[in-house]
Amino acid sequence: MWLDRNDTTFFSVPLAHVPLLDLLSPLRAAGFTSLTLTFGHIDALLRQGMSPREIRTRIAQAGLKVAGFESIASWLPGQTHCSWLPPDIVKGLSHLTADLVLPLAAELEAGCVTIAELFGVSLPPAQIADAFGAICDQAASHGLKLGLEFIPAGAIPNLDAALDILAQAGRENGGLIVDSLHFFRGHNRLETLRSVPADKIFGVQLADAPLHPAAGLEEEITRARMTPGQGKLPLRAFVQTLDEIGVSAPVGVEVFAPEILTDPPATTARNWMAGLRAVLTPPPAGAQ
Image (cartoon, rainbow, N blue to C red; front, side):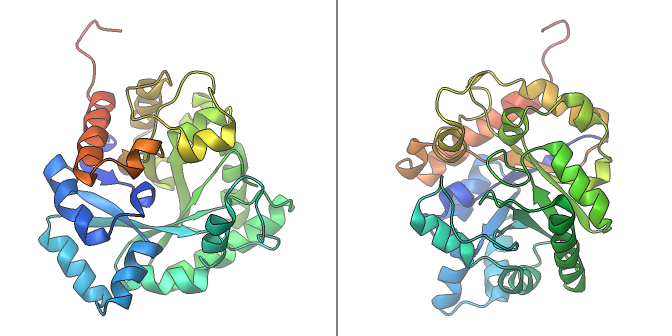
């Protein structure tokens, strides 16, 4: 099995400022086959009077599938402030609870919901695992999987910590969303990634960066990523490791950068797809 190169996903959070319906044609024209949905995108359409069924229909008519829903961000005690995110973003994240997100994701047939901890709360791993397990049970009641994304600036900073949460929770529908920038900046090892059961990786996000951070970690995560192939991270080795263990999850790009806010969506989609293909295409025989 291989990373599903026929299911290329556009992770939509960086383009949350663009209306969802304006994204569909550019994404399909660039070659993407699926996209994740954000609460902001969907809430705007619901306020305009569209139903979840109508939204699903418009996405399908554009030739795209829903790869997941991003994300549950408020799910642990103490998630009320964050030192590295702007107050307006913190306020928005605080509303993204399981009770709000899961029913909506189910109506949209999203399949998998991302859950992340960005606030950096200080809690025992067992307490985090209990909370994660409880939300897995909620998700299962809606027919959904729950993908835990580890983030170096949060309370689950690396792959080891995320695997510990999964093991303690012990839920069948709990797995991982693996972001390449978070992986390398979290000082994770490919050997650890190689030990993860393939069916526990629900999605793969690719972003590039200099080998060593040119900016602070928080700034790089939120504003200074590079399109795959533009930086120096060993993304081919990362992808090869996922292939070796048999991961067949959707793979895509998630880049936060200043140009994302000014470039037309079609330009962003083409650039991301070019970077994705450059990383996923095996090098010629004999090439390094």
